Length: 241
Image 1 (cartoon, rainbow, N blue to C red):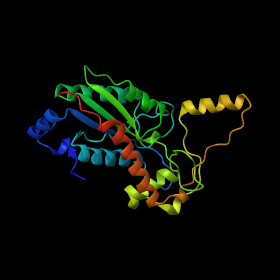
Image 2 (cartoon, rainbow, N blue to C red; image 1 turned 30 degrees about the vertical axis):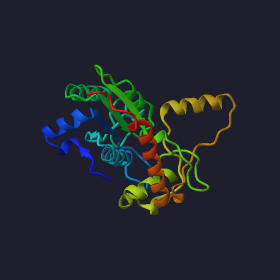
Image 3 (cartoon, rainbow, N blue to C red; image 1 turned 45 degrees about the horizontal axis):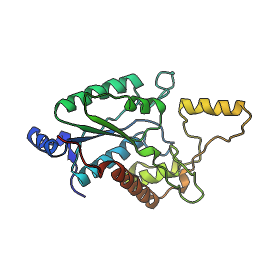
Image 4 (cartoon, one colour; image 1 turned 180 degrees about the vertical axis):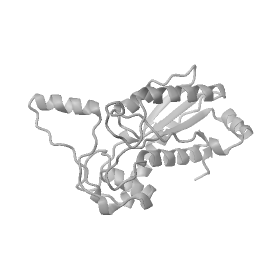
């Protein structure tokens, strides 16, 4: 894999030359949030940072510094978090950043994230530019099968989440603390669940079992996520400078 084109590590002249050839910019946006007792709070940040590096190196596209914090559904509800901003704050920050980069010649932004909170997604989906195209890519909704007997979809701190970290940052995972638990569910999904129960629907609380995780599954899962994003986003022709 070629060396990623990290904006913060390049000279102004080098940045100008890269943008002249391909006026796209990858903007990884992480979070600082709970992913179970055995995983670091920066799981999403670690994932999108690695994806940004790999995709930047593979396709020769400039990559912005990672934003470490995202918006949370609970940020304004008095619930302690590991580090979050309001939806409005994230939206305004991205508007300012993209406007600055657009004046510098960027014609397409790829906002790369892995946070399923509704507030976070809405902040990204409503970012505005003068003329540049904005594409939001959520690695967390690229669903794949979990390990055998595991949950069938993406859960914070579950088998897939833990497998990814065992592959990407095994030194940050403490499997001694891994246990089946009920992960955080965004506010809007909790409302839908309450309405379903009110109609008489009996649904058990979702659970996540990280003890099924393996580094091998994490490597395969990461490769599939990277390849799907590459096929959907980065193989398309870049916009004219």
